[in-house]
Image (cartoon, rainbow, N blue to C red; front, top):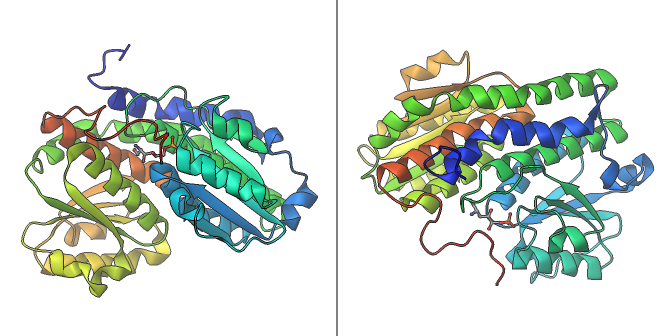
Amino acid sequence: EKGGYEFFMLKEMYEQPQAVGDTLNPRIKDGNVVIEELGMSDDEIRSIRKIYMIACGSAYHTCVSAKYVFEGLARIPVEVDLASEFRYRHPIYEPDTLAIIVSQSGETADSLAALREAKEHGIKVLGIVNVVGSSIAREADNVMYTWAGPEIAVATTKAYSTQLIAHYLLALKFAKARGEIDDTQMAEMVEDLKKLPGQIEMLLENKKRIQKFANRYLATEHVFFIGRGLDYAISLEGSLKLKEISYIHSEAYAAGELKHGTISLIEEDTLVTAVATQEELYKKTLSNIQEVKTRGAFVLAVTNEGNTEIEKTADYVIYLPKTNKYFTNSLAVVPLQLFAYYVSLGKGLDVDKPRNLAKSVTVE
Ligand code: M6R
């Protein structure tokens, strides 16, 4: 059933182009985004004044990404919460708020409790869920399915990628309804979305090169991921993926925070993965790369094609094809997933079933 792949995780990474296409295509009509299951008119969308985005783990990371995308494109304030925090923090509920709960399994105990908490306070809940008919799908007021298909590996890959797509579609729909983007901008961004499956497929072809690189880091003890803006959001995911399946201690930092403590941990040969896809922040991240290099770090950089001058500073560079600045996480995640996978594989670990973890966390 692994279809010739050594582990489900690799199979599921390879299913990403299909899963992303399946989540995207039914919701694109004539250069426009159509989300029938949203159950909200344009007037209702315009009346929303705040969005809570609530989830756990990787699903939470897609919410961190989505905050940048929603606020950037649709200009709606977004509060991102870990479900385990939201359910106990007594948020200040206001009218015209929407809560979006994101979950692959639809059974995560904290996410379900957060959903109930929001509903009890009269907040409308939209679920972004992968498992059809799951508890979160049933209890949410409306549900937008991610069509990733069954995900077996504990480390999520294709479900994560489809959650990003659901967020982009919603952000575009909201941006359009609120007059923040016009038809031309919408059509251009839709074109960029349609290119993502092919671009993801292309990035997966890097696997041999990334495996070779990963094999050099099997004995490493600490890895740091840095980035700014959306590149910070993807760093969180890259770091979780690595620690989850390779048991290497890793942390993600907003690159601007390095100076506030973390940089003291950088020594000769510490691996730092720097993501720099956001052109307006590129120079800033580049100078953070320089700072860690000066302290002896080995830097793996992920950036957009064309940014070749980064090779003067970073030791190893992975280039991503061009896309809209709001969609880069969908591409940057691929090399980070491959890196985590090959470190785990190289260490001889059970990639699909890391110790102490369950696929679906149904207890608090
Ligand atoms: O089923 P869910 O999306 O609600 O699960 C949330 C997290 O438990 C999940 O994303 C977890 O962090 C993954 N194992 C990460 O790869």
